[in-house]
Length: 318
Image (cartoon, rainbow, N blue to C red; front, top):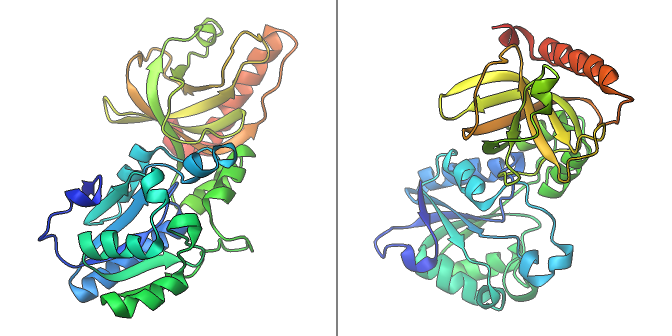
């Protein structure tokens, strides 16, 4: 997938485009439905399939006090979009100039002028342009003037749920530790990627060595607690079953920031320091609590590892 970091980077001969526009934060099941429709429309018309998105949540500029944490980083968003078979993504810098652009100018300069759009796909709640004045209805009005059609994609609902899939809902699910439902809403595993760094090495002292991720990771970290999950070492390509801890270690009360730590099951001699890894969350086992002494903590850690092994099944048995 080609990534254009501004309309000026799109070649003049890029060709006709079918375009989907949105924040695409998390690249969840609703976004994937839009992208699948986009690819079908592009194939039917012989156009290029292009996602148009932004380098930040517009609220980060317009109302920073109301801006939520991203479900994924911008780089991770581009990586996820790249895995969906698109021809290109146009990443727009959401600055004061773009924020003040009228909906009509957005259509004329970006969709028509740069991308030669033939079809525009958006969700029903999509808004664009100065003060969010642009709507799907306005796109439909402008379409005949500029020679493009508009396809509004219906919301996606999980089976058994009356709530539409959205980035906001996914953040709520992750904040509650409900990684199983979040996985269904995302259409992929809940995970974070980062570098393994040195910690206090207390887990190793207790017989449960952990790979501690750096503070900077590429996705929203689920609620404090212990999870069954997986660790993928990108340096070796090996995927390991793991018991994963998120939190500040309240038993010892000497960790100042939230940490993601993964104990690789039955692999106590691994040296992962400096490795680039992904930690995947499969199921929450329990919340984070302070224990009365090391013995009680070790008993619980043993139970957590056993529970994770049972949940992960035969794949965790080697």
